[in-house]
Image (tube, rainbow, N blue to C red):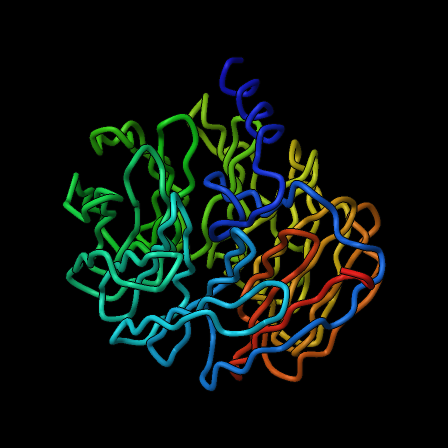
Length: 364
């Protein structure tokens, strides 16, 4: 009971303005603490000049995002003007920035984790893994956690970059770790879901998912939710340490690469079946589906009673959380593999042609 109660408390005490990491918080729920204006409009666009798969972070009036050009960009949230660029040396893939205590952390495809000063873009330290990193860093208890394709989950000191511990798995660690109450949870390419103590890296338990998994788990109510390449979405009971339910569309058999968002009793996730699925968190039964024109690898964000998600058809969709009805859409003109970030009354998302878009309401 304590685990469930403290999960609810965490949702209430989330920072109101920022979206400082992939999925907005260490539990990876994809939920913003504040809603967006009913009517959105494009406020600015920044052209990075190369593809962007990384998802933005919003913190302290700035947007941070990685680019395939081998850069970490800091943009002014109000104007879209470049504040600074940091050269990573290797392309940044899907790894998304995490902002904590004046530092920005991001990893590149050369396998290097970078710590960068948020104020001026000066490098503080780097840590080298043995293979590429597509996982997004998560900062918790003074440590930065990040997975690598060398099959290792790393924990390093946020201040110094010194290695604290490693956990070896049997496959690439593609997903971002979700963290709650000192425990990190990773869904793996080795078909296992693991619970690892942040303090010392001790593996507490493992649950077999039975499928290759690229999506990151989302934590809420003592459960973890994630999709697999076996065309299913799973709920894992973290107290009983077992799979609670499996969802599979009755006719559309495609992998789930998108990470889920959770609000109340609703789990929302994109699929490579071109659909967005809303499931009941307790039962795994479908509440509704919405069909786009291409696969949905972008992970949904929820703000208030609306869902915001990109599709590879080049559109950002705004859907009603209760019904799945389309409220609005924005045509970016290129694939949107990046996931939306929501903070300070604005939404930011990046596209495969290197554009960073900021949307908000009139008068902001």
